[in-house]
Amino acid sequence: MEYEGIVSIWLAKCEDIKDLQHYLQVNYSNFGDYLNSKFEKNFNVECFDEELKEINFIERDSDLFSDIMKDQSFSQNIISDYSKKFSDKLDRKYNSIILLYNFNYDGSIGEDQDNSVYVKFIGSFKYRT
View (cartoon, rainbow, N blue to C red):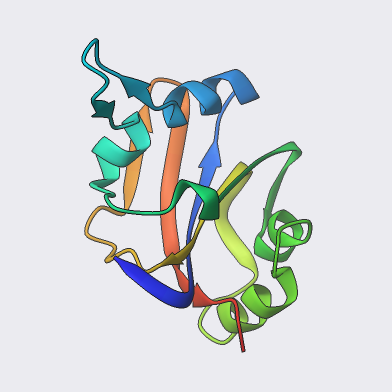
């Protein structure tokens, strides 16, 4: 659901960037119809602006949200809002992050495992103050 000033965040653990790219890859049918990525299908994510999607594979695994978030857009604002609700220490180590800006995911599906890619929705946060 589109929502100005909110970012929805998923953390992922995968073997390499190719696995993550495959999980997020959008395809088109022979008729030119848009075919959702595995991410979109498995989390039932629809109607978001592709231009407002940020994806990063991080070379080192980390179990600290601030460490994974530090090189992302609006990191200070997002970390600040996140830390009001949660501890910096995560439940496991991750090496990838998916951010959908101006999108407020309802959290109906919390996690997904697709071959070597594990993805967990961690919440929606303010990125603009």
